[in-house]
Length: 186
Image (cartoon, rainbow, N blue to C red; front, side):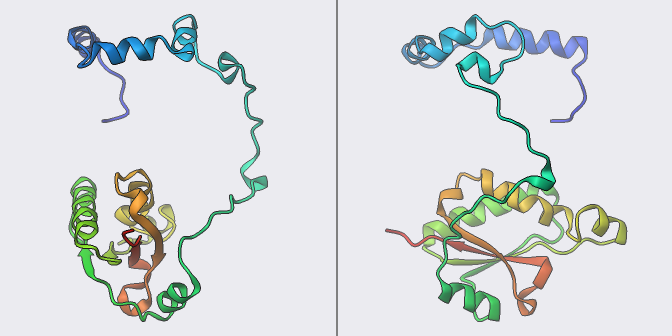
């Protein structure tokens, strides 16, 4: 959806649509409305803040002072060494060259679904590099698809199956490609 505001006609049409929608499960709606948070939200006028829920708003920290959140990367040293040396053999290669952003997102989602179903462990995802010098500066040296990949993977329905995402070895595409390592099935 674009970032433009809705016109008066679009607002009226949207409101008519919202009023015409009926919940699929009325019992579920009643259960949700009976929750303490939902009762409290119905009484709130204006923007919702942390105080509305009995908490305190988090203190904002300037970006330069923020510390990275420690995370467990999901791979052991053997995997990291093989990835760094380019000694990994991908089970499947997905090339997103020539795709639009929306079609690349769909292709990535279907490739993840098929790879998980097939029990693959390593996917080589070729995204390409930025075409022009201006694109490189704007996107930090990456193309549009490459810039969006991390968000797509984090929000993906398959995120729980992904153990790690690493930059590919130069022989497999370097900055224009990624390894996606999937978790083992238990």
